[in-house]
Amino acid sequence: MIRTGEQYRESLRDGREVYVDGKRVEDITEHHQFRPLIDIRARIYDMQHEADTQEIMTFEKDGERYPVGNQIPTDKAHWEAKRVAVDTVMRDIGGVVTRVGDETVGEMWSLADGADILNEIDPRFSENINRHIRLAVENDPFHVSANTDPKGDRSLLPQDQDPDMLTHVVKETDEGIVIRGAKYETAAAYSNQAFLKPTIANWGNEAYSDYAVGCIVRMNAPGVKHICRAGFLGMGSPEDYPLSNRFDEIDTLMVLDNVLIPWSDVLFYQHTRAATFIRTTLHRYSAMPFVQRLITYTDMMIGAALWNIKQTGLEKQPAVQEKLAQLAVYREGINAHLTAAIATAERSPGGFLMPNQSLLMTGRVHACANLPAMMHIARELCGGQICVTPDIESFRGEETGKWLSKFYTINERWMAEDRRKLLSFARDLLNSGYAGHRLTFHLFAQSPPFAHLAAVYRNFGWDGPLEFVKKAAGLSDNVDG
Image (tube, rainbow, N blue to C red; front, top):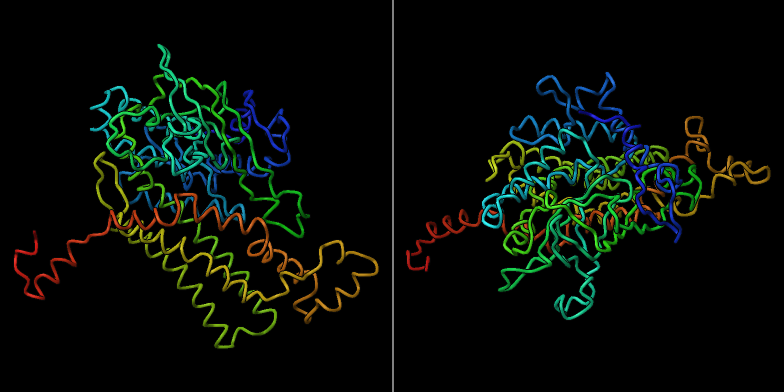
């Protein structure tokens, strides 16, 4: 089935325990901090039904329609359709949102690739992951990722400090397992479920651990408490901060206070081998839609910079063209990596079609590591007026408005109001609290930069260069060791 926006909103009125600014939120769908993103997610659901976008946003199977974002990828056409759907959403809403479900559901496909490991632990676990993958398609939930723990003192083992700093199992019952701890997660408060997994990558010689747990957490389960950061909405007017007021994806510390996870929702438990597998393969699918968002973000930077250049008549300056070209190279570099990763996709152990891992992980490093420099170039091209332009009320003021109209009007094409709108957009994109949050999110949301490079190391084909140099240099077989 495919949900409607109203069905999604209704699913959030389930008694979940959400706090912001230290206060309990009674109805998250009506709270001003959450409403913009809930409205966007509802809009995505409604696009699945509208005549102009249904063919893009859904696929048909056995006479039923299902969301293309959750479609299990077994063919290159599936990945191409997912890319088109993401681009369609970004154009429709006029901005970038990342944690809306399609970017996180692929983590479950990664775990399904380890079915042999899960079967060794308990055949129920591989049955559970396959069922949840199917249900994600059939029930169209808003699915997110519960990944990062508070961690505490990282120089200590979990058992040598407050044990709740890392999520763990505290007891086993006939109904399931009971977990304690906390996870940071973007969009958790207004989603339906999360795939929770450990952040520990190195288990040493431990074969079993209560910290090695993977499961599906329902966002309204008893004991789940969403403590949310205050959003950027309302810190400035929508006219001055158009992105902050519409596209701020609220982050949550999801406290797990003795939460019962039914056995049907347990994906692995105690066995560190399964936990190690998911840490090393977690983003083999989800990196694709995650990185794709940065193409749209770069288009926004290019557009803001180029319009600023055009308004001041500098587009023919070679030095300006050089910086614009750098932004274009960055943008097309991301696009090329994603396009090539699909074109040379590989069959995964679970039978899915997996984007070429070396190209995808290299593309993620290119996109995320170079983002700060690209934002700086765009900031240079937009100029210093993005940090000194007065607010909307000054442009409307009886005494101040006439002066701002005089000094912000360039010619008959570029009047003061259009310049104000452009500078406000660029300021929010590049210079605001929202802009800084967005940058940090892309640097850390799919693990920190060193882990991005570690993924490249694991997936690059080192044998090719070694064989080439061995032959070209005439090395003996002794060097193979």
